[in-house]
Length: 186
Image: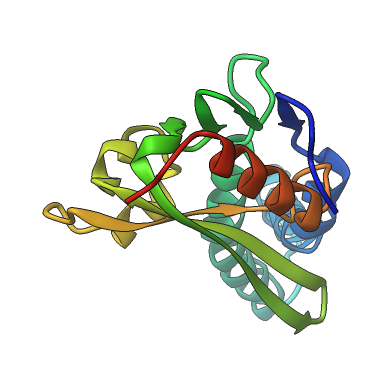
């Protein structure tokens, strides 16, 4: 497979995002509904409460699902930025929603990392070895910031490909081709 165009564009795939967030959102909604019913029943003139264990269970599920949903929603919303595509690659470099523009001269290697065999399918990442990776921290989702040390002179930034509307192979081939066209790399 070769790539012969000057610009490559990939958008966030909302349907994939919904598949991954649906279970957590369902549990959060169900437990939130149970807590709402508890609040309503307490406001009634003569409260008739079901067993306390039901509401304790609902509260525990709600409190467990809330951080998971918050992390997922933060991660997925980060793919959308100012009505721009999530990933654009051209002669200037690779522009991804989390990092902004990374010029080709700042990248020393590109690898496709595949995690196969999960129950939801393959999770592919494009790993970019870059100089001064901390410069790309500013626009990252906050849940991923712990990955970098402040004094790293070279490091890996990765791009989750499973939420994009192009295949991992298409993205990888285009990245390698555009990278190779940009000149010699150190």
